[in-house]
Image: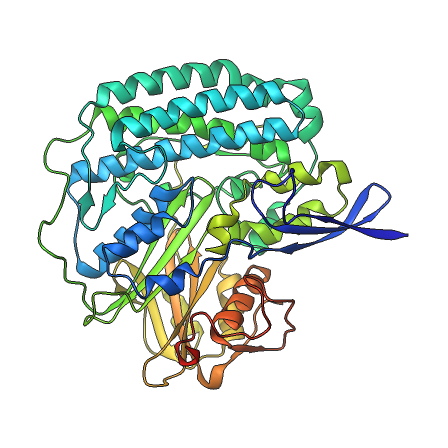
Length: 360
Length: 147
């Protein structure tokens, strides 16, 4: 006889409110229904009532972790409409912020994954490292979250002392290689809890259009930093870790290796930060009529913004946001089918879901 | 299990240039604001989806937008083909559109969202309860007429 187990919308196993209804038989999950919308704020609607400066601050609030990605996306879209190219130093600073944000997101996720595996010391260790990343973000922007770095045509702050940020990167890289990588790739507890669990095949990943580390863990080597490079990424050398097993372990390994690639990009960007201005235009930017699309490889995957301007008003006519969790979440249903009930919290967390982004 | 680290994805020569002709259109992709657009007005959407999938394109999302002067709903179908963003624009007159979620499961949630935000009815599908908010009436969030 099958029975339903509701998890959420408010539950200790969930980082943010959403609802999973699991249909189980014994300890096996037969199917799952997902409900989102508990964080709905009508941000796309609000964006039609804010001018192009205010809308950047609004979009920074789409997500508490990858806030820089959202401001970068909307600024890039407006820059495309206005035919503006930010100065090289600004493009490098955008990359540095984006990679620090990826480090922040991946290290935070590693801690949460550790906790859900029953590995609480790992949680504490990761959150200690996360503090260091946030310190670096604070050195640059003065803020630990919502960094307010992007503006149309440039950035709001310079990186005055790249060496101070490099010191943090050196420490992080050393600690991540010493602690996180060995544990996530060889530790028996991690392997037992993750290998063969919550599988998403490459075919399923393709059909459901999943993105980011979730896609790369299912054998799809897609990464916009390489496939459709933006900001200063064309000048960066880095690899794209890809795994083929499609299970939770593969998602863990891909993110762990991406942390090291982020450190590699950060080192290049900080060491070769071009001289010159970083603020861009000082006059009000005219935004002509049209639609422009901007895509960014966020920590969780592809973020896409479509911005339409009518050329007459200083407010956008339409701002459409598609976040990575929105693309990845429907595939969780496939990952859960046939899984053990006890693995459900870890499986849903393995896509690194962000419901704040998803609901907007 | 072996971890493979992709060195550099060389941009393969994409065959997206053929797509307009395969759709029976005389126009070609227009490069606009950093991406490629095809705006044929009315189009057989399901055929377009089958064609894009046959080219191994990844469905990205749909952007719906209410046109001024009661001009209907503009629907932009975004696809990724080898890193190239391709957008095919159509129009949902009378708030009616064809569903593609059976051909392309990735479109399921976005069709539900467009239905909720703009009251567009996608023929050939049923709707689960509202995805993003409470209530029963679709089209009250972004649909300006109902404000």
